[in-house]
Length: 177
Image 1 (cartoon, rainbow, N blue to C red):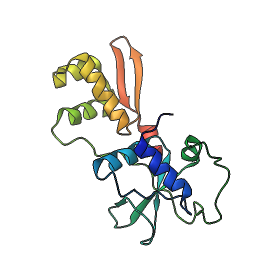
Image 2: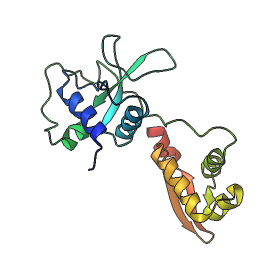
Image 3: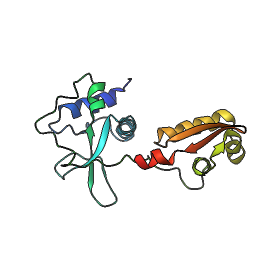
Image 4: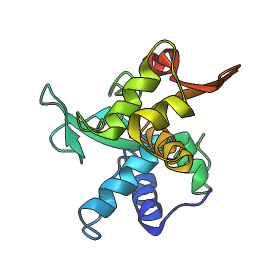
C-alpha cells in the first residue's frame, strides 16, 4: 500500500497517541491535510469517532458533536505495526461510537457530475452512451467521472446487458456505509 508523506505522518502520530486518535500536524495546512484525511477514511485506515472537547477533532457534525479520527487495525498494519496489540488507554467501541462513513461533498446541484450521479442512481442505472448523451462528454471522460464518484465513496456496480454495461449506485452497499 502506497501512502503519501502526509498520510504517513498522520498515521504514525495516531499510532503513538494514547487513544490512537489522529492529531493533524502543524504543517502542512489546509487542503493537503484534508485531502490526506479523506483518503485515509476512504481506505478505511482511520475511522470517525465521537470525541470530547479535550480530544483532537477534525469536524463538527450537524448536531454539533465533535468528530475525531482514530487509526484502525488496517491503519496500524499499513505502518507495519501489530494491530492486535492495544493500548491500555484505548477506548472500546461502546465508549466512543463509530460514525458511519460519509461521502465527501456531493456534486453541486446542476453540474454535469450531479447529472451523472442522478443517472446512475436510477433503478435502471445508465449506460456509458446514456451518460455521454446527457453530459456531452467523451467515453474516457465519462469513465473518469465514474472513478471520481467511486473515490468520493459511492459504491457503483456494473452489469452487462444487451445494451452494454449498465452502471448503478449500489444502494445496499450505500446503506451499510
